Length: 219
Image (cartoon, rainbow, N blue to C red; front, side, top):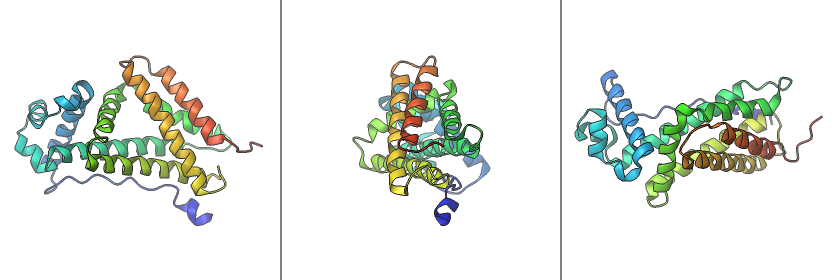
């Protein structure tokens, strides 16, 4: 149990760009990712051509190909970035966990409140579009599956570190349900066109709390 708990928190791994790393290149890469995310979130996959991204980013298609290789490479980089964002949000909430100061309920509320911010709407909308592409593209699907698996593992390891379940496999199952329930509310928020995220945040908190504490004795 001690060795399992000791690995509960893992440092985030930065997604490395293709080609040589330099300050100018890194800045250009982030500009391209921002442009692609905006197009995905507002126009969907059909509007996210290399030409459209290049125009929005103020660069050439060659610059995009230098950093990402192909359009799929660009989309996979967005998935990896999204995974890092979700994990950072979750792990930040975990770091505030105090058994005697609200416990798991506060950790869940912190994570959901940080996720369902209006400024995250475009990012979440873009990830939704990528999820749809994953149904038709095996490479994108594999990256999405790996990203979700890493989120599930992070939540399960946290649960193990605070003895929230009988074993890791049970916690992985619960974590998977929590991720699915949360993204269900993300989907509803996006389909409603944005607006007040509060009701969706509260619904996600209730669902995640119920799944996390199912069958757990509270003294």
